Length: 301
Ligand code: TXA
Ligand code: MG
View 1 (tube, rainbow, N blue to C red):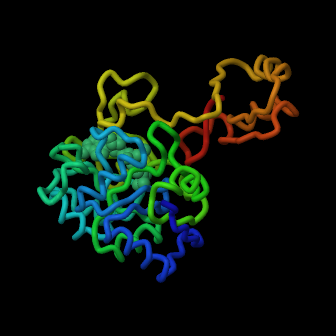
View 2 (cartoon, rainbow, N blue to C red):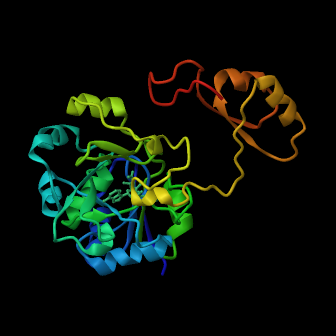
């Protein structure tokens, strides 16, 4: 199969092209589409056979359930129970880069939930994603568009490289706004299952209470048990070797000066300054000591 590639400007849905992609969804096909977090590989969430193809294309284990994307609250209520005490907050938050774990309704095929009695539901803020769901007229089940274990696609180019031969349509709208997956919040126990683009502070503000954050959600040590089914699998495993360095910049500069081959540095502005000339590419995360003030800052490295 050769995917039909539809190019669009970020956040600018084109009616005719969206119509083509929505047609593929309605016919039980697979469509890779942009969201504000990462690209998704989607199918009609109400069509079990279509959803099974997602697992095959990604090489994803069948016990790892999918996130279902909706374009309005009514569509969400067709597949899940929204607790009345949270309805107001959810209305205010959505669309946003946050996914809620809710009690699933019977209408959903088991392949979407991996047989759990809950379902992950998200309303993306990306306008192309929203218009695709709306035009399809059905909720769209979509995990991140990456081969299982690999990093999520954050650009149309990544997605095309991985899926041009295994899906029907790919919408290429350039780079994702956040480049990080949605936050997952279990609304039954008000527990953070996966940190992501929507911050804990934003959750607190919207719901007026702090979510429980289990140690496993920090990812600072191997989870003893999977708090979300996907957590027990290897994730975000890039092809390029990645080294985490602890120590002072002088020691690091020494190591790097003897390094053969190309590399990039990811870290603080201060450390980068101490490494002048060693790396061809520096990716600066922010200044030291500015942790927690905004997205994209760091305190060490
Ligand atoms: O930003 C995102 O969330 C992207 C875009 C495409 O929306 N999607 C995404 O999907 O990251 P995926 O499949 O890569 O990650 C979904 C995670 C998995 O770890 C899965 O185990 C978990 O959500 N999940 C799905 N249903 C669940 C449920 N009922 N209970 C707990 N965790 C669930
Ligand atoms: Mg994923």
